[in-house]
Image (cartoon, rainbow, N blue to C red; front, side, top):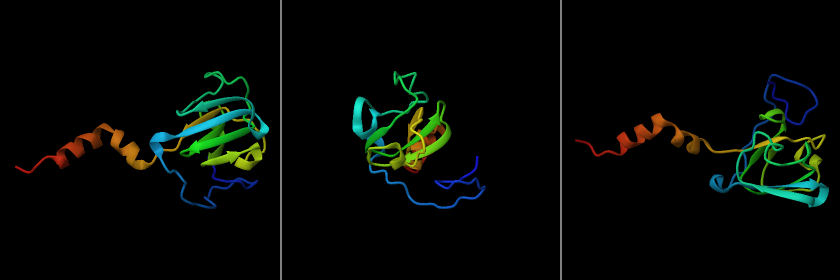
Length: 136
């Protein structure tokens, strides 16, 4: 897929790059709201959801969001497809505050650092054990 950020045109080149603000990867929490300005039904989550409707969210839209901790990527469609929106810690009273043109948002996942991913791979666990073993 093309990298286009918030620009209105497609490009095969990355236009900008910056670090993501993630204070605590092990304690990610986000609250979704049914209406703008944090009104209506709400749902707190701490895990990845490939389909918000499958977990009980009745709408294809998420008009406002509070990111309590961690960083997340919201996706326009189920299965982590479509437009992507970076959600860092903060309050988003309206969908345009997180860069969306429409409140459609149907899947979400946490951003984890590479150390977390590397430590969960079987080969890396074996390498760690071998490197921690005392020499003969």
